Length: 96
Image (cartoon, rainbow, N blue to C red; front, side, top):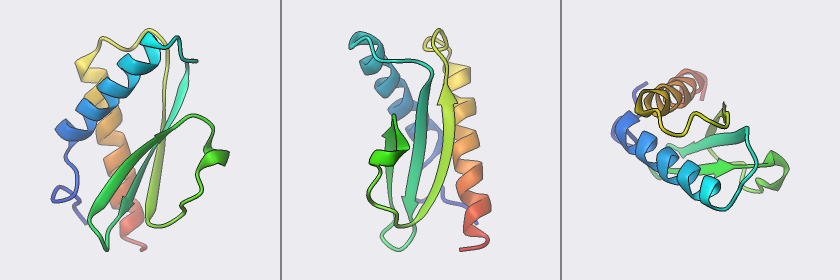
């Protein structure tokens, strides 16, 4: 099942790039765990990061990935991570 009507690789890569830039500016810790949450019923998505034990909303379908320090400047790497997260969501939705 495609989720392109909810989130695209380009939009997610842009959000990831902004998140990582903010974390770098704040001297955030890397590698950084990132999670994509998609709620198909409401066609919403949210990006989560850091310790997953703080995730209190368990609705929808989730995907996870890791961003290592020093990878911030690679647009291709951002798109690869975004593509991987979306692929995980699409795979999970086949069982949803």
